[in-house]
Image (cartoon, rainbow, N blue to C red; front, side):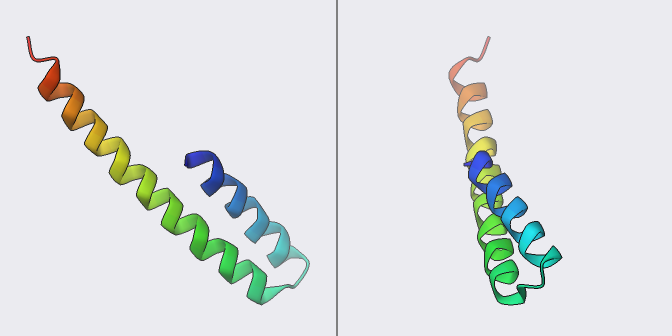
Length: 55
């Protein structure tokens, strides 16, 4: 998930450099959504792992 967020972020950056505003904005919004989904999943896995492996 994080890999896709980085890829879309790079696409947005390249599109912005070449002046493609619509493509840049679309790729940026996709990258943001994927990054936040990754963060939520990461936090959930940390919480689940902490509760499963209590010492």
